[in-house]
Length: 166
Image 1 (tube, rainbow, N blue to C red):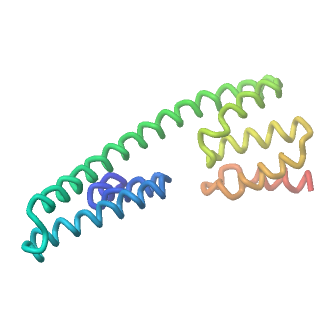
Image 2 (tube, rainbow, N blue to C red):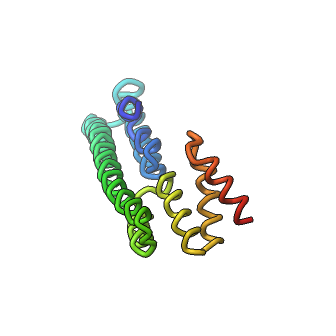
Image 3 (cartoon, helix red, strand yellow):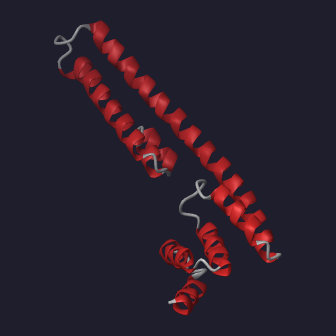
């Protein structure tokens, strides 16, 4: 779906993958150049010199190609981030299971910037904070879990933790 959007209107795929401003500017630039090229070729061919119309058409094509390359790069980046986050979450989960809160906290702090909407990261962070006695951070993390957990996998644990610590 993302590729279809980006092929149809370059930049839209970037917007879907949370590069909103970049996607907006790519789509706007493509739209402006594409309209100018079409106007120069079809609507008023005598109004613009041919070399300018060709140049604008080439810029439009380059923008389309650039948008596809940017989307591919963004998708590779997402895959790399997910792989890194999976490793960090596994290490944090293992440390938490063995009772090593400092190690779990260190692992989670390393992964906090990889995916701000990772439900599992927030659950592990809430567990670490709660077990470590940082109830305010734990409540904030459990509240975030309730907002992010659309599959309702951790809702009962989060609600119980929030009621216990209230």
